[in-house]
View 1: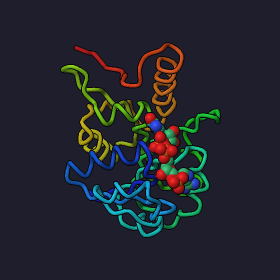
View 2: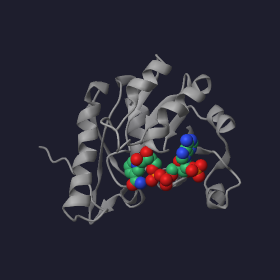
View 3: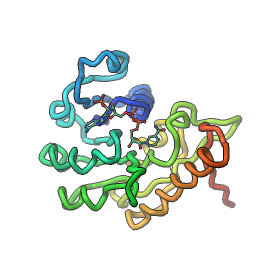
View 4: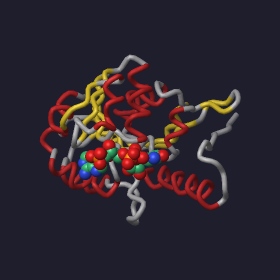
Length: 198
Ligand SMILES: NC(=O)c1ccc[n+]([C@@H]2O[C@H](COP(=O)([O-])OP(=O)(O)OC[C@H]3O[C@@H](n4cnc5c(N)ncnc54)[C@H](OP(=O)(O)O)[C@@H]3O)[C@@H](O)[C@H]2O)c1
């Protein structure tokens, strides 16, 4: 698959590395491609200016600060239309961690997946503890489920489908739980939640 990642920070670089290793073509869309901090990303995929890189991917992962999402989508709406948008961002200072409603207003027929936002990036880098594979809880419309399952599996995590986009708050509450465990209860960042069922 051709995947454009918006942002080359913790989340963008780790997921890009995993997807490239799984055989996907990865494009990093960044504001300043010549910034030395992005030099290492060249070994993973193409690094370039936002419009040129957004054009490349059929999948677009948002991995920029959450508060920047509405303006970003508005500015690039023409190029983003028709792409499957994976949203890993958390706008932690706002009431809602996600900006799905804003995105939908800008791109009414957007195909949107809420995923990769519930765990710290270290867990995407090393998704196994002992013999156990971490779970990644996500939600998406049914037509995006196949792509989502594949991209989650390709990072080494086990996808757990929570349902359609009416479940966004349920997924985001798992982020809140992770924050509480790690930032208030002293669990280390290499911590994930596991679904057990018969
Ligand atoms: N860190 C985690 O463990 C984690 C886990 C789950 C979800 N998330 C979420 O994932 C997102 C990314 O987190 P991160 O830790 O990867 O952040 P980060 O390391 O700070 O990287 C952010 C990236 O976004 C770019 N960026 C900033 N403002 C932008 C804008 N207006 N337009 C386009 N690109 C912009 C930055 O590039 P410049 O060099 O141009 O500033 C940088 O490449 C956040 O929304 C965060 O809440 C983070």
